[in-house]
Amino acid sequence: MLQIDHDFLLLPDAMHLVHEYHSEGYRVALIGFDFNSMYLAALNTVDYVKLSFQSDSYNHKSAVEVLRQLGKETVGYHVDSKEAYMRATELGIQHMQGSYIASTLPSSIHSLNLIHSNFFRLVVAITREEPSFIEIEEIIVRDVTLTYSLLKLVNSAFFALRSRVTSVQQALVILGLEQLKQWIYLLSFNPDGKAPIEFIKTSLLRASFCEALCVCIKDMPVPKSEAYLMGLFSTLGALLQIPLEQALAEISLCGEVRDALLTGAGRCGMLFQLVLSYEKADWHRISEYAEQLGIPQSVLSQKYLECMEKVNGIWRQITQVL
Image (cartoon, rainbow, N blue to C red):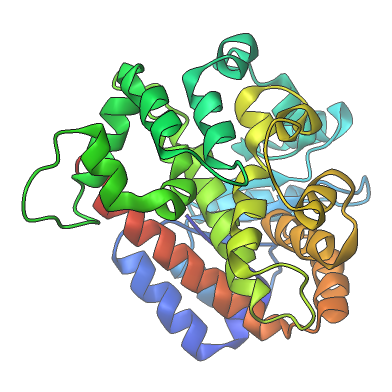
């Protein structure tokens, strides 16, 4: 899904790109709604309209009625309390996002299984200061799911190999440790199709966005490769269903990245909070962090679109086989 805010409506080049994505089958979500010609004209390209429930003072009744008549689906975001959930339900909001919603969703992942799983052992092994190729291979070959997923990944259209790879050792040689580190979440796929696909896509997009913005910021204490891992492993606690601090305790990450993920400290912390704010469409915090990091908001929009295009393109190629 492509998410756009009202600023995009004023940018012809950006809207042209949005139209292209929409014509290719991407769903488009517009953040916010107002009764003026600019918004109404843009609705031809919009599938969802996102309405904030962050404040009790927000009254979306008229907007919901109009959107329903126009055949647009509504998404309530910042549904962070039971009261906000009740208001959204009464209005007939079709989809919801927020911490309250997340807390009520049943988990399909068992923490005790994953924290002791070969997948987590692989994450630990590959993030060591000096990773052991032999240890990594041994972990993968004794787990049918990891072996299956690794071979499917290497044989996907993304790598476009001339001959089919049939061994774990050969797959690791082709990927290399750095690429395996980047695509580690893809190995959580299961052959039974129960893998958290949207979760993995979100993780990859967050990682790519951190990496892309890192090179735009002066005086960053980490290279873009570490910024990528910061975005990727920021979701590790959610994947394992344990506190993030517990998950990171087993992983070798640089101090700046660890502090950023756990406390939000430093310039890495500001970058991470900027990415999270962009996900939540929290424009006040976006402006605040972007100014502190010296990133023009037009660059933010451009980089987000580029990262989304990159991740979606890679995903399409990889999932032709996965």
